[in-house]
Amino acid sequence: MVELPEIGALDSHPIAVIGMGTMGRGLAMMFSTRGGEIHAYDAVKRVAEEGAAYARDKVGDVCKTIPGGTPGRVVVCPDLASAVEGAWLVIEAIAEKPDLKTELFGELDRLAAPGTILATNSSSYKSSEVIGKVARPERVLNMHFYLLPMLRSVELMTCGKTDERYIRFLKDMLPRWGFVPHVAMKESTGLIFNRIWAAIKRETIHVLAEGVATPEDIDALFREVIGTESSPFRQMDKVGLDVVLDIEDHYAAERPSLPVEVRDLLRNYVAQGRLGVKTGRGFYDDYTKK
Ligand SMILES: NC(=O)c1ccc[n+]([C@@H]2O[C@H](COP(=O)([O-])OP(=O)(O)OC[C@H]3O[C@@H](n4cnc5c(N)ncnc54)[C@H](O)[C@@H]3O)[C@@H](O)[C@H]2O)c1
Image (spheres, rainbow, N blue to C red):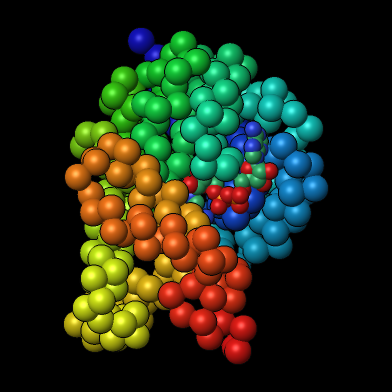
């Protein structure tokens, strides 16, 4: 039986963030809003330092939006062992590559104290897919965040072997840092919202692939009827069509009945270098003109 962290440990023990890219630096910023210490580690030292500087720079403003918010300390650690030392929670936010994550979770499990919670921020992999080298899977789970600090929802999901008390504990504690937790009641690829969003993206592309309507018309209808400013094609262009294809390939590997036309269209765009905003052209080609 694993032990739950004591509530007092939340302030006196650090939280470790592994991977200080887009998400890691946002996580370091959010989790340093209650005065504690954040241990930041990235395989690339410069990224860890830039990410920590970003978090320190922004935390003051974010604290104003969180009741009881007080800036904490973000400390860059030279290696994984020093990053997890004393931590009650470790959040992994490295690249979306299951082999890398499996290696890392093996290391984290070996280095972290037995009661330390180990969470993956993976967008599309179930935590059960990264515990191949973990001896204590009862302390591993998915903890999936969105772009920070704007979106504060977080989804919690079992690895199939997670001690349920950890999930309840995190659900109760995460609002301290301004998060709004939601629990997936069973394992699900894409957790909750990303799975629903995947279905919207898929059907949107399918409508285009069949030649039924243009991206402009589809996006305009979506915005009008759903009553939102964001729309599927613009959103996919922002994320990058190579990433959208990787995600859809992952769903299709589990559910081969998904329409192949969607992946074919994406592969065709990627082959042409139409990756979206990052290459100036995707479903839309007006990015360089902006
Ligand atoms: N970007 C998003 O909008 C978003 C949203 C939710 C979840 N996620 C998930 O968060 C994770 C990170 O995504 P990101 O967009 O921040 O990626 P990113 O590429 O911006 O950052 C990843 C960082 O991990 C580092 N890294 C790679 N291997 C490492 C290792 N073994 N040890 C330590 N550091 C290592 C890299 O140097 C890099 O700085 C992914 O699993 C992704 O699916 C991303």
